[in-house]
Image (cartoon, rainbow, N blue to C red; front, side, top):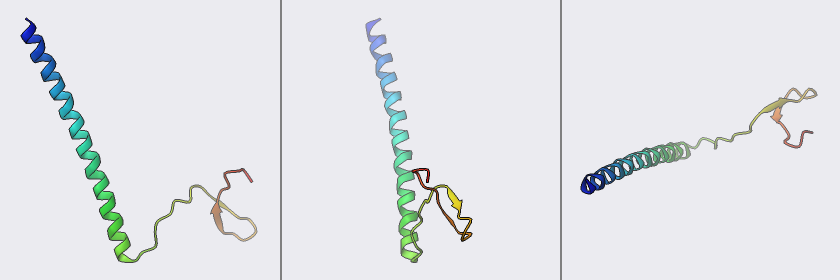
Amino acid sequence: MPPLITVLIAGASAYMGYRWLSKQGARVAQDLNKARDELKRRASGKPPLKDLGALKRDPKTGDYRPEDDAGG
């Protein structure tokens, strides 16, 4: 019976290792795709994308500006 338990533990460990490696591989592939897209965007000469967060309309000028985090 002890060899069976050892085989089961080894099999479960191998399966969990496989799942972990699969997730890491997917994450690395996603990071590489993001980097490739960023390099293509930079090579095309387009301005960098900037996340301004939520925008608020200025009633005086009609322009949209980022909201202040300080609440003012």
